[in-house]
Length: 335
Image (cartoon, one colour):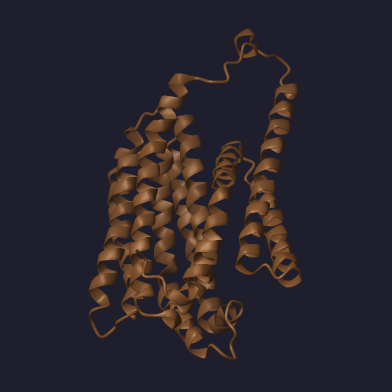
């Protein structure tokens, strides 16, 4: 369905058939990550993520270089690293909660009778989680449509795009996580009935993503070929590198806009304004998919896919910003 070139179809199938078994571990880690962030301990999942990434690389080298397992070795390395990270995160959370309980000098009688499963709390969580899950699923499907469009241009364009998006995914992490931090910050202040602090935090976050965006832009614009070269053999695949560099230089100029969108969405998500958060996110990706198909029919051809990305960011940011300015997100009550 994705029009995957025949020369890489077998490897793609082998990789996914193993990787999908680790989805439970990935789900577990993301859930635990959210708990640590809510406790104000965001450095803990960062440490586990770094350790998991290092372990993944080491296992990649062992399975691929030493045991010649090829693409299956890469998949098993990811599976094992994610599994260990999820398990250690879970055990660490249990120890953390035990320490927190021991530090409390006085524990109310009602809290001693802990209820570990609360139906009402589950309903409150589902009000946020289900729409967000549907939204993320639609977003992922949108990405599949774009990937199918990329694959239709052949292996060279596909390889260049894939290598560039690997760099792209790393480059946008700082700004994406500033948005996640704003979400947690907003939720905590809404719960504390201090919405006036949110606007100050929002302004600080906007300044942060602006600075981060400029730094990443300079890095990718000046040394994009070096970063792409980490994924592609520069001697034999120069055309692939050229495609990847063109993608990075086109998209990185607009990273700051993407950061503004994420930060504004973070306020909406953190306040529980899930409907508008869904609207902004779906508008972003639906516009991106639509413009990718439209622009590829112009002289831009495959480069139209690159340009569709900042167009989607712009639409998403405008909708989110309008909602933020109305202040209606302050009126949302979750619990």
